[in-house]
Length: 355
Image (cartoon, rainbow, N blue to C red; front, top):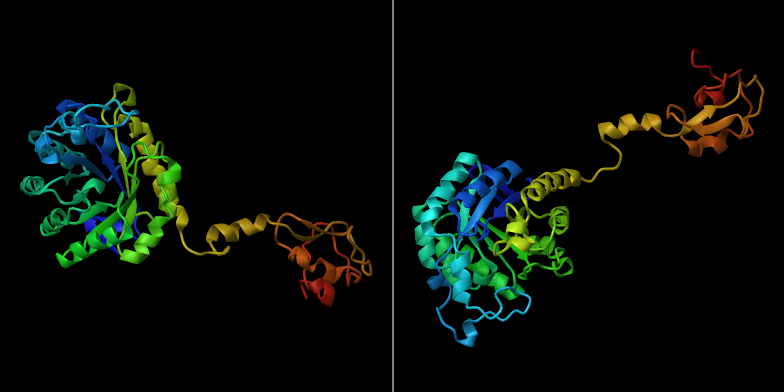
């Protein structure tokens, strides 16, 4: 259940693959877009993703109600969908520059195509990987076209029912694709943590036998880190240089310091998963010297009774385990024993250590 892109493995048994999503947070500035690449690379992400579309391939330029945004909480309420995509687009003439910058920075640059013409364009850019967005995941012909490029594909499953996810996976596999990752996603912006339902991740991985991750639109990094503990192989988070400067997705995007923390802490969570283990590591064995064990707490003469006063459970751990104390109580010391001697079975048998 793993595949690789430019030598970076994605799947079970490997650290989570972290994607910084630029989206339209460049605010139509190529200089800012290129600066975002450098900052993302400095954060330690594995990849930076952009989006490939033109307003006319996303929607119609129409003022009819169907094409008008209806969201009282959005600054776009009452405005045309076409105008939103015009502002949020990443110009196609920027793509090569952004991808080249990614290569120079040592991270993977790739994109989400929103229609089949975008796939043709991205193939000319030689992208190594594709992403299908939640809003396009029922466009099975688009998925088929992407798979037939021979490149790995990551599909967000936002809004999809189980049967719709089955259709996506079936389309990938029947089109000859074997390099697939699915992302649990809640398609609200921002997404409330209690709508994330990341416990779906292990179920999805078991059901579809492929790497599964999270496309996360919640604020902060808590949900993303929780997903790693549940087996997420991929984390995608929107990225912005400075939320105060705005941007179409700025409100739920991570700034560089936060993205860096996500990268570092997700690796720590992944390392912390380890394996099933009960006290058998070298660290545990060394630490055992500091646990409690049974020691002689008072000088004892031959024939003295072992009592609660002269046998105590203290640190360090070189004596017998505390559970054996009652075995000794009421018995007599077979020879003189000095304070600070670890209790041993010889003190019952009467044999000295040097005998």
